[in-house]
Length: 147
Image (cartoon, rainbow, N blue to C red; front, side, top):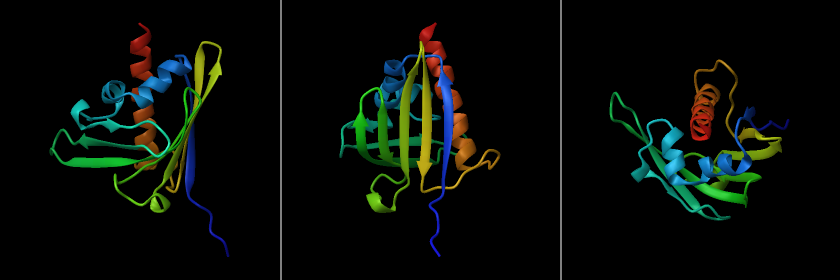
């Protein structure tokens, strides 16, 4: 009996153009402004197909570090970004995959965040809720950028 791959999707309409949203996801200075507890000096991004990225989130209460990273699998500027997500040096075939799709909607951007390889649902207080909260931070950052 085949088993399905766990996955979930979060869709947001952002009050920003695709170029601004793209920069928020692909430039270290922008990422540091909205990724939770992620110092700029811990971010390394090589945004190209086959390029690697890594960043470190730091728990503000315990100073515990959480290293995250992966490989960019597909890069279509302002439209789509596909990357593995998890431990920085994990094999590609064993890593969850994020597909980020940006669609223009007037002056706004519809952003679809799809994570394949990890289960999640609203209220799980884990991966889904963590990403949802992080995307809230992205929305706030983009709103601040437009002011």
